[in-house]
Image 1 (tube, rainbow, N blue to C red):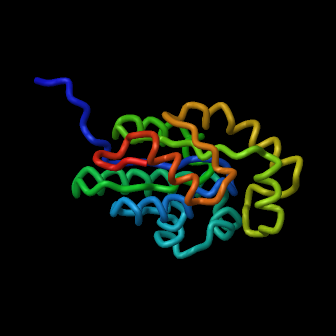
Image 2: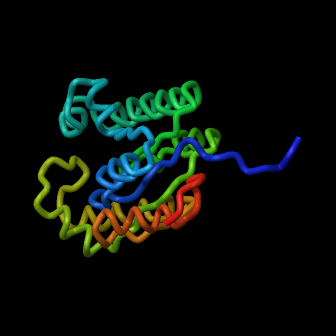
Length: 181
C-alpha cells in the first residue's frame, strides 16, 4: 500500500451570500472540464419551488432537510461516476454538522470564498429574494454566526476581485492534477 495522494474528485465552494460561489463554480468547472453542480439549483429542481418559497411554505428546517438530501445525492453521484465535480454550496450548507461530516467523509476539498462583510452588503443590497437577508443588522449577525464554520474550510480564497482572478487563486492552490496557474 502506498501513501500517494489521490486526486480529489469533489471540490466545494462555500461562503456567505454574495461571495460569488455559483459564478465561480460554473466558470472554474468550465475551465477544468469538470462537472458543475449548484446545490441551490438542485434543491429548487427537486422541490419545484424557489428557495424563498421553500422557506415561506415549509420553513428553514424543511429546507435544510432537502439541502442535506440533495448534497448526499451529489456526493453519491460523484462517487459512482468518478467524474470530478465543482459544487457551489449554499451559504448555510456547512453550518449543518451532518453536511460538513458528509463532505469530510467524501474527502471533498472545501474552499471558502472569503469577502469582507462591507463588500457582501454592497453586493446583496439590491437582492430581494434571499430569505435570510431581512436587514443589515440580521445580515451582519448571520455573517458573524457563520464565520467560525467557514474558517473550517481547507482553503480560503479572497473573492473581492472579478471571478477570473478568484479562479486564478483557486487553481494556484495546486489541488487540480495537471493544472497550473
